[in-house]
Length: 412
Image (cartoon, rainbow, N blue to C red):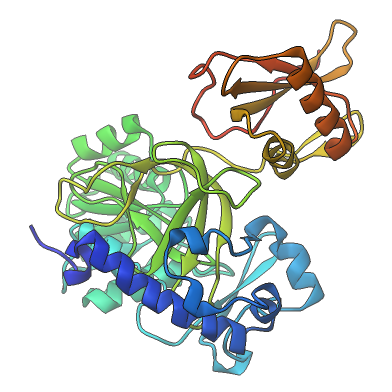
């Protein structure tokens, strides 16, 4: 087995100790240099953040709130630890939201994922991520150069020119979306161009269905995927074992109940919350809005960090009921007031008169009672300003899919 560095094979206890030492320094860095986190973490003593239980007590910053936060304090809502003049680049993602890039080599840490995908020094990388507005092109470019790989900056579109470049330059490595790789290969067939030099691909930014991976593999392109974002850089990546996504060494990942900061139990689907150790942009407990679940044990490839299943959906389940917004955080607030509830799911549907109806499905400890149902219903009315019905369910019957609010209304 080959590894990018010795960090990937650390004993998990050693990794946890070293990452939390770095995290405590990151909290001090954020409090002293980033005005947003100076406010958000006011009163927090970094020395006390020794483990995940302590980390889980810190406030969450939501990706979905960035647009409004940045409107009030352009361009980065006071979240960066460097002045704008000290940055390398500034990007704009749809929304818009703005993302900073530091001047360090491999700032986004994609080299690790590229190495796991088989990219090696000296091999030409055909990069089809966009260099325009968003950071994806530069994320891949900087990762490849950190590995010692020259880069062809193909960018997006212009499929025939992409084919011509590959046929002439014969790169071994592709990075971009899986759907565009398929388009390039099909266009090459149409043009009878030889693009068989491409034998390795790292894909991201969209789903990689098993059928598409099989199609690409059958074409001789071993295809792995990674999970990255414009604010966090690399979060997790596949190895040749293709058994879950391995969390990057530069972040701490938690899985929490959607709409809350509360940790879920191992194996339960939750929202991906990331704390980055990147000093320039010290995002602490950054809620991505993505759902995933942890896998037990270490990867068969020998890397020992936490593994997640990959993208399992979106965590933003806010619904409008009778003109009122109902959020997962409100449902969690209801449940916190009733210790008997072990698992829950708010189902929104229509009654026989096509009026909106909310039903809180609960798995509880002990025997259900009309008094408990009435008490929970009162809490729902107090928290949500809406009436809700209660349905007690057998233990183990509610699905493990990360849904706090399940809106099943249909409109004819």
